[in-house]
Length: 306
Figure 1 (cartoon, rainbow, N blue to C red):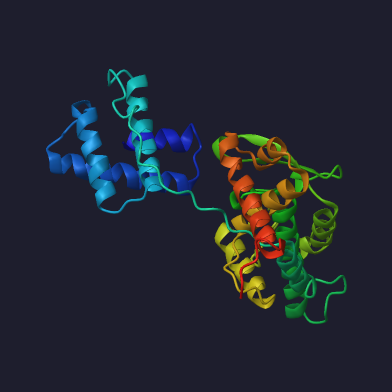
Figure 2 (figure 1 turned 180 degrees about the horizontal axis):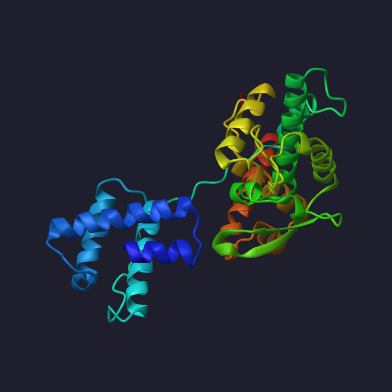
């Protein structure tokens, strides 16, 4: 198991979050094997694994969690098959019970504008007097550039914090590495480019020598994912948004608004970096839900008596 996880980290370059989830899933399998008296992966068979999955389902594990659990196990057993240590992957044919797919949460365009306006109020071109106030204005300019970029290009949080100064040129195109280290090039809108340009004039006062990250912390080092989440929550409260705003919600909003305007599912798939278009199709359900709400509220034969 440890060899497989090292393979995922060094050769497949999985993210720490994905590796941690995989480790938890496999550790659960190891504990179950120990309880069953199974001492080698070769002793596993499909029948026993079906009983294991059924037991987890009875314990309340959701279909989605079971799918991830089985995916981790299939990956390990497939790795052992490739090494010649197993004759076949006995988990290959197992499927988790289906579960209802929850729709992604998005902000409407008015909420996006409120969020960006709240940050813009503190990141104006003229920096206030005093070192502390200048730093606050610079951080606000940084935050506005980050939020504009998340919404303009539909980036994942990990992709955002990995952006370096040299990644973005004058042509308003940004190349990022997504899941599985796959590269894609995304356009950056004019508003985001303007916000980034303003932040870059202030960045040298904060950035440590040799730091290549576009978005840096108060200490001058690359900004962490957790810090981005914290700053977004802070500005959402300042904007009076009564929802738990996350970086991924801005990505969902980007996809939903783009699909609503263009209707081009394939283009949205490419911009998001989804390997399978079925992942992108969830936004069509979201768009239909919005249309249904409009219909229910506007059509005279759909209105309920009050």
